[in-house]
Amino acid sequence: MNKKLYVGNLLYEVNDEDLKNQFAAAGSVVTATVIKFRDSGRSKGFGFVEMGTEEEAKRAIEMFHQQDFKGRKLVVSEARPPKESNVAQTDSASPVEEQPQA
Image (cartoon, rainbow, N blue to C red; front, side, top):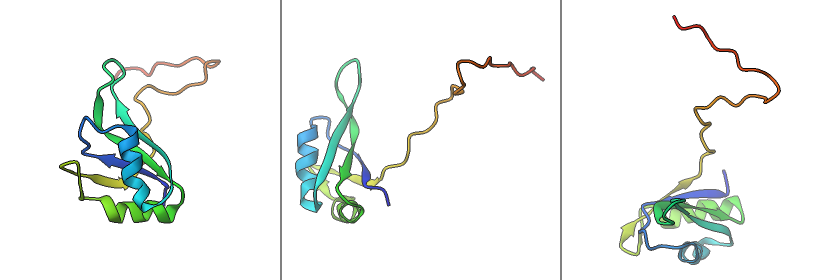
């Protein structure tokens, strides 16, 4: 199990400190970050919490998934690795060959 958790369905007013304080009840919180739009700084309504151990992460899921936090039911699950972007990742020294259109 991963120590990093996805936390969804957050109120837009929730900040990093609120998230850290909530999850501290399950154990040591390494980081707590609410994801925000770059241009406006407004919350996207989800964030990530990294717990100190895998056991604490599991406990946090059990404690907080579908539980009320500031009037909203949290969605808490193990964070997945980010998806690869649609842009092909290539070595800058090698040219990209175009595929012929059928």
